[in-house]
Image (cartoon, rainbow, N blue to C red):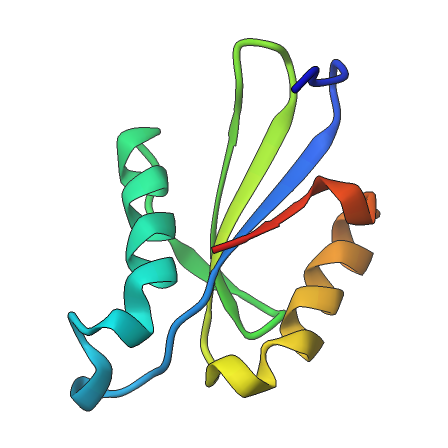
Amino acid sequence: MFLNRKERWIVIGLGNPGQEYERTRHNIGAMVAAELASRSGKKLSSHKSRANLAEYKLSTGDSVSVATLRCYMNESGGPTKSLIDFYKAKSDHLIVI
């Protein structure tokens, strides 16, 4: 896939809050997003969109915002839309795990 220079990409890792979901298949998306942030040397920090967020740049100049949401998966639409609106990201630059 060709990446345009200096574009904003948003990666959302879905999961469910609470101890009963920790380290279960329900949180695979959130675990992958946390690993992406960690491998980029960033920590997920609280964001006003009901998400924990890490931001970094790729060697192409593109910006990446990796997020885990602080809500249940079935409530993920609102926080996801808030992030897209906040960054004015293109909808085809959204990756949901």
